[in-house]
Image 1 (cartoon, one colour):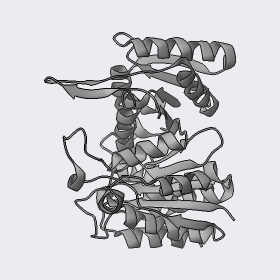
Image 2 (cartoon, helix red, strand yellow; image 1 turned 30 degrees about the vertical axis):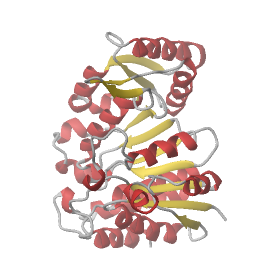
Image 3 (cartoon, helix red, strand yellow; image 1 turned 90 degrees about the horizontal axis):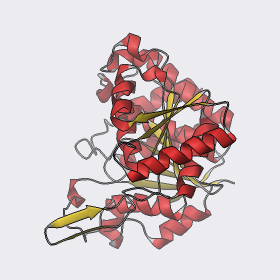
Image 4 (tube, helix red, strand yellow; image 1 turned 90 degrees about the vertical axis):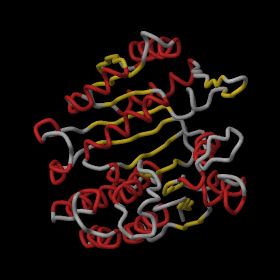
Length: 342
């Protein structure tokens, strides 16, 4: 029996997690669950954003499903303070998750919810492939004498493995994003990606774009992209920009994968503390993250596809949560998806 660790987290995390659990119970009733605290909720109880016990449970699981972490309660500029996001970093590092996949496929039913024109959005189907365990987020950092520093470091091996993941996921083209006109890490990135392409994936088209150009093209011509291959910080920013193509960040799921161990599956949106407890959060990104878990974590393609199709049909039938310009509550949105599964 596959074991799934549930980390509901903070804010709307528990609400959208409950929605995903109901959908999973409908399509995969054989799954076994173990729940642990993470993020601010774990800090309040344990003084740390992720306990060793929770991390060990994640390592022993078949997959990890995460709601969201963070909120103003735990915001601080104190560099020594414990922050909810540290739980996320501990998960990525402890599970050796180096590849973050964020599929972006605006649905025709939601074209009018996007700030972009319909003719710009049509036929957009891209994947942001973000490196997760290197770069400025994991480099040396500190503050002293009125100065602060954050060091960006990448190794050849780190770049090689994310490049291979990007080329394997591509249908026809990989767009590698960097800032090679300024950063030495980006020059190494471009050099290694070019070599991996020529040595191992010559049949896939490769283009290099500076991150500022990529950001502009993402909103001007999004269907140009197949796979966007990025380092950690650039991918963090570009994937949130790409989320708006779908009409709302509440629609975007993600998967974080390594080499054979359990993956981490979570919505891209944050904990949305301003609406927590009101029952109005959009659960669709969480439900779609559960679908990614079924596909990439448990190799259950049919179940994953049935969940994704149910979400599509519910939206076609008129489902709209608040962030999509409608009035549906979290519970109503969940029921609409469940109805399309039967």
